Structure formats: structure tokens, C-alpha cells
Amino acid sequence: MTKTAIPEKPKIFTSYEVFIIAILATLQFTVILDFMVLSPLGAILMPTLKITPAQFAMVVSGYAISAGVSGLLAAGFADKYDRKKLLMFFYVGFVVGTVFCALAQDYYSLLLARIFTGIFGGVIGSVSFAIITDLFRMEVRGRVMGFVQMAFAGSQVLGIPLGFYLANRWDWHLPFVVIVIVSLIVGVLIVLYMKPVDTHLHNKVQRNAFKHLFQTVTRPEYAKAFAATTLLATGGFMLLPFGSAFSVNNLGISKDYLPLIYIITGLFSMAAGPFIGKLSDSMGKYKVFVLGSLWTAVVVIFYCNLGITPLWLVIVISVLMFTGVSSRMISSSALISAVPEPLDRGAFMSVNSSVQQISGGIATFVAGLIVVQNSNGKLDHYGTLGYVVVGATLITIVMMYFLDQYVSQKLAAAPPKSAPVASVEPEVAPS
Image (cartoon, rainbow, N blue to C red; front, side, top):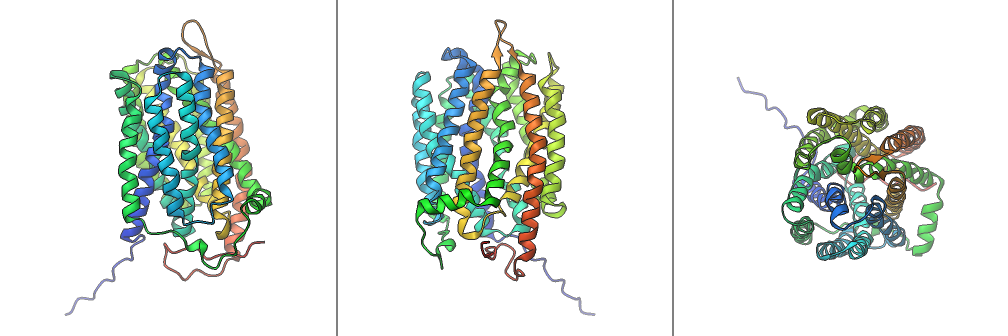
């Protein structure tokens, strides 16, 4: 008897698409690490540079606000060029800015360096997400976002503990030097192996950059997405910059154990990322977002009102909190990516990133005004931040519902997709 050949299961991603996912995830790792490394360094920078919590918050928000302004200025031009060239232009500026951070010697030079870095670094994420939306269909976009968002967890596992160790053992400038070295390697790989991403330039009517920006900002469906993004950014930007100082001064955790917390939390987040992405594709982006939001809200209220806490419990709470945060990030990114029309993706992503950065910068600045460090070193009113974050989270659930309805109607009206899974998503005529 002859054996019947079992047909091979088609691959979801080609080898080149796997490379794109990997290189964009690594690129995001360097950019996110550059921003997030300041959070654990807060416990070192504030006494070393003799700055207040409000000044430290300004260093963090300076990056975010400059990134937001830069994104708005770049939005009108985001769909006029090959996305690979645009990506490399801003990535080079980001690397130069990080070099300035590594050379900074006082509060003002560091602040200026962070502003310069933000001008370039803040646009990179929007260009990356535009590339993802161009190359991958909605059916698998949750998986892609899950892998790319692993950069957030990866920065905890590898970057933040290493950065904190280098800063605590030698000097706080050293983490930025390491980021520069890794970024240079990533940049070379992109130049050598990434193909041009210029499909959006084909059959496209040239539009005035400022008119394009105005039409993107004022379109009602897009405005709803921008409003949701404003509140989505509140949580992380309010709590994370003061996380290390809160752990050391309020929870009673030794600085020596902070890397362990970040490593364990990051490992769990990395493991959960692909699973959450796959769940978003199968169960539904909005459903996963709601569950992640409610999960996060409960944990945040508990965490922000803790006193002296055992190390093991802090680790468990951190794992639970970041799992919820990852669920919100992955599902919301995948859902929002389906909002713009193909010809508006670059502009939409730039504006959306700008809104996220500016609102996050303002949230960080406001958090710096709310949190007060008393004479004993403890941070007062941290619990108040938790309630603000939870309030924003609950409102965002409602706002994302309407976006989900819009995306569902848009996809239902789109022509049937006969192209391969990872091909460019068919265009939908603008309303």
C-alpha cells in the first residue's frame, strides 16, 4: 500500500517576514530601552545630580514632549517617502542623541540631550507600525504586534537590569553607551537586508504635506483613535518613572534586588507576549483589551497603596501588573492599526505616536507634581496616581469599544482577501 502524502501546513510567515519582525522588535528594544532605562536610574540620578522628583520628571517628559512635537511635524511627510529611508533617517538621529546622553554631565545637559533624542526617537515607533500595517494583514497582526511588543519586556529582562547594574557598579552614563553600540548593529542590518517599503507610493496622488496632516487630524474616525491613545499613555508614563524610587523608599526593597524584579517580570512578559498576540487574533482584540484593562486596574490599586512589602510579593505583583499592561498594549496596537486607510497610514501613525508621547509627557510632568519625596525619602501620594490611572483605564474601555465597532464595519465592507496571509492589506476607499 502506498502512503498518502500529508500536505504541509502553509507557513504563516516567510523567512523574510520573520526577519522583518525580528529586526523591528530589536529596533523597538533599543528605542524603548533608551526611554525606560531612566526609570531604574531615577534612584541613582536624583541624588547624583541633586535634582528633585519634579526635575527628574522633566527629564523624562522632555523626551516625550519633543518626540510628540516632532511626530506632528513629520506626519504630513510620512506617506511621501520610502518607509525604510524614513526609518533610517530618524534612527541615525536617535543614535546621535543617545551619544549626547552618554556625554551629559549635569541636569541641563542631560535634559537637552533627552529633548534631542526625543525629536528623532519618538517618530521611529510610528514608522515601524506603519511598516507592519503595510506588510501584514489584520488576521495575523495581533501575532506580529505580540512579537514586536516583546521589545518592551526584553528591555526589562536584558536592558534595564544590565543598565541598572552598570550604573550602580560604575557610572550612570554607561547604559547609554551600550544602547549606542547595539543600535549601530541594528542600523547596519536594516541598511543591508531590509527591502524598500514603498507600496504606498504606487498609484498615489501627491498631496500637500500640511493639507495631508490637517485632513488626518480632523477626520472623525481618526480623532477618536487619537483620543483613546491619549488616555492609553497615562498609566505607564505616570507610574513607571517613579517605580524604582517607590520600590526602594516605600516598599523597602534594596537597590541590589531591583534588577531581579525587572528580570523576572520581563521574562514572564516576554513569554506572555506571543500568547496574548495569538489570543487577540483568535478571541478578538477588544475582548483581550477589556480583560487586560480590568486586570491592570485591580493590580494597580493594590500596588500603589502598599507599604513595606516582602520581595517575593513585589515580584508577583509586578508580574501580574505587567501582564495586564502587555495585554492592553498588544491588543490596542493591533486594533488601532486597522483604523487608518492605506494612503494615510504613515501620517496616522505619526500623529498617533505624537499624541501618545505628548500626553505621556504631560502625564509624567503632572505625576512629578503630585508625588512628593519627604524627608525620610519616601514618596507621598503615589496611591493618588494609582486612582488616576485606573480612572483613565476605565474611560479608555468605553472609547475603544467605539473604535472596535468602526473597525468591524470597515473590515466587513472590504472586498474579500484572496492574497497570501502576509501580503499588503487591500485598500478601502476613504469615506
